[in-house]
Image (tube, rainbow, N blue to C red; front, side, top):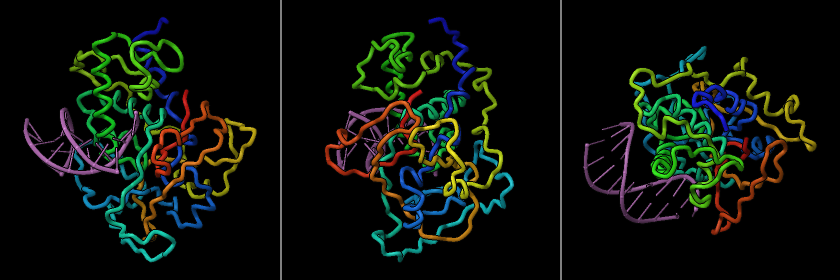
Length: 299
DNA sequence: CTATTAATAT
DNA sequence: TATATTAATA
């Protein structure tokens, strides 16, 4: 149980899910064929289901923004919602509701890491969202989660000075799993718990926006012909894990209809992952469309 | 406009 | 339940 308080960030990188492990909002569990069949956006443009109903503010960068890199940075483009592909989705692309976001432990971990690196001061929904670079995440998603997360921290401050250790069967104790089992799965940086302002430097790591992934394109190729699933070696081994990340999303190609993917969320087995998760019991209403950012998994 | 928060809705 | 949405406020 000896761990330096300065230990948690020594490994934050390692704990971040490698890009290969992340899954874009657009193709969670659908097989590539299915995705294509439904014309669910081409990953060529990493832009994803950002079909924001109405507002979609833009052109307002005050904080750091991901550099356009080598892309022509077309700024933004209003996707002409060209509907017409009958198949079931003919509703006005505006006013579309996206499925509820499921905060998997990994996604939450990215969230926590982002907050940790931003520092409490800068950890506001917009910046967190940007830092997380998770495609499909909206500011409201983060805001909602942040609200709950702050309440969780508050609750915990009063109980114990060291709390976060609950992950995976260590010391569970102070709080009921029923109340917040998600938050307990992720290590909470010490600074969160005490208001000790870090006036001088709040951020530590220079932040590496998702290491690896050197070649910027091949995104599309990767998804159909997945070379091979490395590092996992799942016995079954026929799963693709494309990439994720919003990163450089600007890169328009053709305007196609924006298809929100509704995912039935039928996961069978987790090839490499740790724990298999069963929803269904959580769905009292039966069939609810749920967005799974990336596969559930624990460290 | 964005952030925060409480209340409410699904 | 967990997450979304709304309204009031800063």
